[in-house]
Length: 122
Image: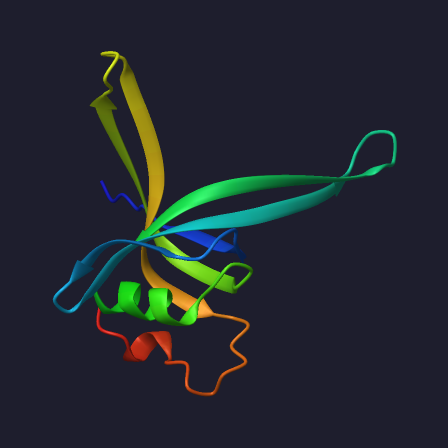
């Protein structure tokens, strides 16, 4: 049986990229990305619902993200969902689901020096 795990996000960075671990050929970076859905409720009032997503990026793509993106940057992210669990200090089981990105398109590139995502080593 074939299975498939792919996520596409189109949103904005809620804060500057956070470099968690510099690496020899890049960096391991965490992004906080907001996506907002707008809809009309049953009373005809326009509503907005914002979801926050943890996105992890590594290697050369992580380095480029840390260098060129900042809070408010608009991005198109393709990646996969990964879930992890751990036991905290209070011995309670914790869960986290995050996107591990393998492609990011910088959508509001006002700087011609920005790299194409296909040119960045992953």
